[in-house]
Image (cartoon, rainbow, N blue to C red; front, side, top):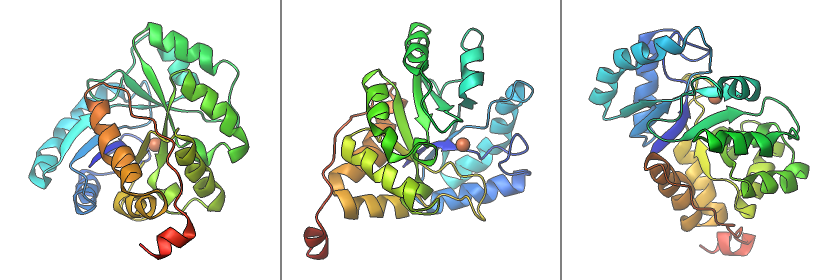
Length: 245
Ligand SMILES: [Fe+2]
């Protein structure tokens, strides 16, 4: 599996503070079925030049674990907006960029920003909207999706670790066809680890194999080919069909 959002590079942000801790995360990722990690530290102009250094330090260990290590960045909305006129670090060699809304409502300028990003050759993936927006914002999220903004849900939201409301919003996003990716957003192995397999099992149980394959396998593969994810509104299985599977 490909994990498109992960804070695994050491001594850069609130991820691991040492190379040893980062290596522990590599092993946890591999045990969870991950074979490609896009390391996405929080954007900080002071540490951007260090990202490639940290990647190179960790790469040899990643290879030993059977993991391909790529890099990107996670921007706040304001940083992305400001940096768009300078240099943006997308996910790997793609035109996709991780952006955190960093607010509990959808700003009015989002569609305009997506348009401007498109002119510069970038496509926005909003990270973990289910943790920031309630299901009441579903109409607004669908509108953003129609304007070419994609969504990445966190595996721990699917697993209920962020509470029932983010979990319900995430499930409604899948039913509405706007959950394009599910990623770990892992920061450590203690309390913000991978658990992608657990999330995949839950999505398989709730929405079926096609939903799990599309969101966890196909869409990240398409992303690495710089292609848009497949957006399908998956029907939630009835309790009866889940019980009799
Ligand atoms: Fe993150």
